[in-house]
Length: 117
Image (cartoon, rainbow, N blue to C red; front, side, top):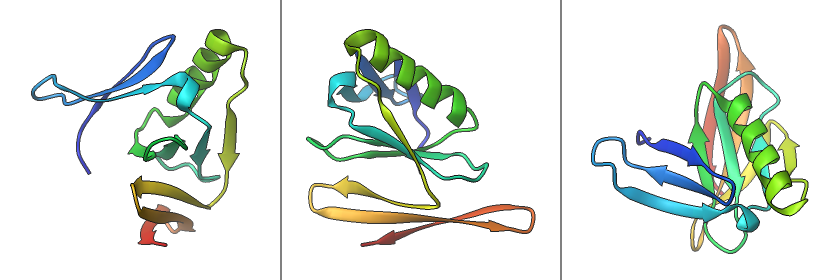
């Protein structure tokens, strides 16, 4: 896990290193296919980008981020971004590496496991 700043505009999502303020990644909203998140109250969500590798993030503001991404995509392109809710989903971690995230409700919270596919 690495700390990152997330900036969402009308046209793109920017991932910025908070220590150096260097742009690490720019994802156009048009490239985003869907958002994945668990059905539990945890902090994980994934931005699925079919033309690139996906982005798995954790934030205490998960719900707000998802809402802003859906609204930004709708206003920029009249496209309704799908939000996939499941306690298990896949994401493309790198060019040829798929991982699967499993969420499980446990006493005192939610357990998240990330496993190679």
